[in-house]
Image (cartoon, rainbow over all chains, first blue to last red):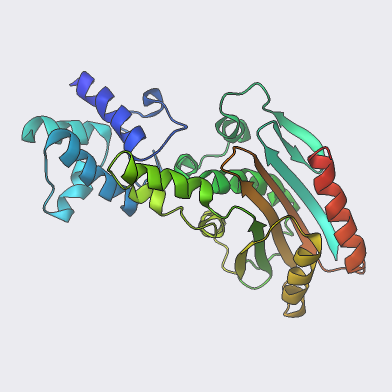
Length: 84
Length: 202
């Protein structure tokens, strides 16, 4: 699981062009969206959908699912490990 | 018209009213370093394009010079300009679909220069008028004339800036606050032209 989380952090940085950040800057349980954590927004949710499809073969068909899945690196990794 | 304060951000350093605040000559990532030195908590900074990052830093330094009584809906206008528009990010976006075959929404949103004004207005909850002009070079006369139009309509403060990121790598952000006063427009133009030359070491 820890390898998956580290890979996810690197992929998030690359996919979202967060070139100033390193994986160490992203906490496993920090909120990804909103004013806290990474401060991501709805555009970035699209990036996450692309990321999951391209890297893990997982398609998000229900947009409402995203709110729970994209909460943090922990929730993303958990969802991937259960659905890949 | 009077210049209340000015800031300058470039890869070598960040300046406030002519004084070096952060020396970034030796920094691998000058903008990240400067943001962290500011101690401001605004994670969206990391998502911004280079124009917005520089404007964010320059504005953070100018905030103490904003009048406390400022009505940000009616009193403040933003006037920015550059020569290269958002070409720096435009090229990155083209690369994302031509080379990586993965057009990036998060890059696409920055393929307009006036996104800078949007980022600042969101951050500080400013609701006044704003414009981002494309010009061949910094032209003090234009800023003064544009600002005066706003002052004639009742604005009391104008945040102006030349925010440039060339595809060749040169970057600079010269921000200045203008307020109405008895100084002549010509003397303000001369002051602004002199300031940017000093910052550029010309």
